[in-house]
Image 1: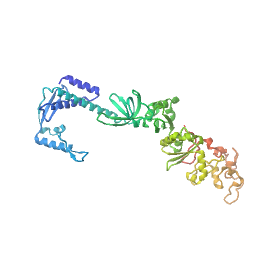
Image 2: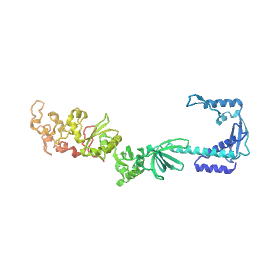
Image 3: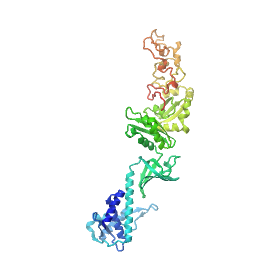
Image 4: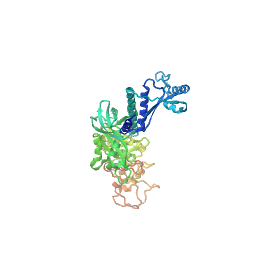
Length: 492
């Protein structure tokens, strides 16, 4: 064989990115197949090729009958399979001995050189087909090895064709991926030669090469797009804790900062919204809410219902359920179109969210009384504006930790204003009124702002103690002494 063939094999190996040794082995197998198609060829043979000169030899293997019978029996035992239709044992019609077994018994096998002078046209065509088949197999193996560990990775491809079943996306030369209908976003169009981004969903081997499935619906797509646009996420200064997505309509992402001084929401939004705008553009206008992650469930649930304003949140840790009270004019915004906003908030936080308006919640309180509220651990005090105190009650008490609210336990009323009545002062332990100069229970609520009662420090005004504060003025009320405490603030 001429050196031109050898040079051509090396050039082909460089072009296809295949190891030259694999092509040499493939060429040996091709020459062996071509030899066996010639009349009078040996039953058992192998081809040896010189890697330097490209000279080859066909060597016939002369196997003793007993050894041949032994190897055939082993092949039949290994090749016996079960017919999937009948369930019976099925043997191969013409068992072929694996050439690797000959190496184990080389000392019992004689050899002789039977290299033919000319293979002929048919033999050359057979060799060509075998070489091309081996090259295709090597390319498929290389592509599978390249993409098998890239599941979840963001890729960019060019749309080749699209129909009602799937869209074919070219990733690079001779590498294509499928975007099935189930992974497409409703309403998106994929035109020919259009460049799109997607995440690799699945990679599996097949006879025609690796089957690569990509997705435009996977929540991982949003994470990868933000990682591409936000350097703080790529550098692990900011992390996307969770994603809740309804593809094509709206998404909510919870972000958390691992570095002091780095605002996670501001980093994702970017200067004048440039970063989030690039992500929205790639998602064809899908709206994205960026929520700061919080370890306190009540705060996290309140922020997750953005852009609606939340008045207060009552949480049940055992059932992982949160009851959210919103102003009447924010109820429809909190629920969202067809419940979309509440549904996404529940997915993002992992809590079941029950949204109530203030009017509805007040009516339920009036109807069921305070017994149910005691179970919920809410303070039973009625503020001067007629609203219920939103703070959590102390263990073993019906009231929160405010002194004036605790003073209600000594009178038969839950209204703060009743503490200022002269007849509401409780007696001391002996049944007699307390001596003059002693502080009266609840006196903090009746003192003038800044006035100093006898025997104590100056008391703050009622607004500072929360007695006259309105939930409507203070936003989300603080719950002192409660694991569900949640200072005010509206969702971003």
